[in-house]
Length: 289
Image 1 (cartoon, helix red, strand yellow):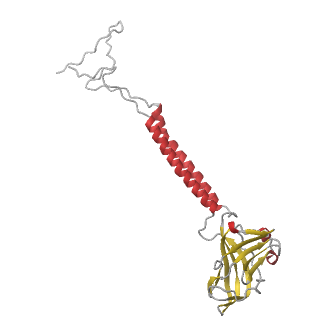
Image 2: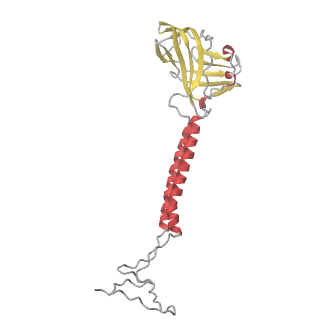
Image 3: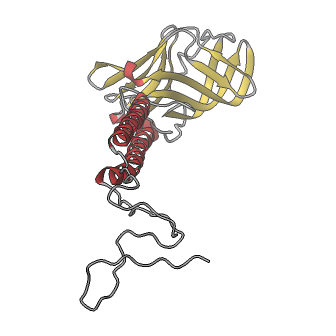
């Protein structure tokens, strides 16, 4: 049977009490060095990922906010794609086939950066051959064979807008004097607009005779409830919105790269503390006899 270890006697209090040697392991146990606390480097290394996540989240939020505000902002002159539409209820013939009281739409899609001002208060957006379209409910659709333009004149008829065919003349006109409005007097074809209050009739039917189209010659003999509207086509995004989204994406990519480099440098610099070698400054554990 093993005997209990006898404490090592050292100089101590005068009453002769035994003092156990410092660092002496307990019975059957091995010496364990004191646990080292975190150093400044290791604390920084643990905090670095959190700072990186916060930074990246902030950049993403700012980019998303900028993209959303740009996408929801009104179209501006230098960047928007708009479709200019004239609608009404028409009578006439298409390729010698008569129709009556059918819904008709004439439309042109263009970039507002192409709008030019020929004179004070006059704005014009030219279109190419077969760029202007028409659709007549229950009859047919097609494109106009001539070049032409969408025009807005703030000086005439208290402000008016129309579609001009370079081969035939004015196909449709809507003006403030006839609809009892004033908005067209300040419109410049560079933003979304309308639809306007329905106009009783189309005052330019004298020119809308035998207009050559891809579906045959089109003649309009009567038109009522005429309106004008300018709106972004479905799925179109303005250049300004695209620019915001592109810049936001590039910023996010750059932020991710910077955070990755930052974390790599911090990990390289943060060296964990080395535990003391057994036997240095402390007696090695000994088994009792």
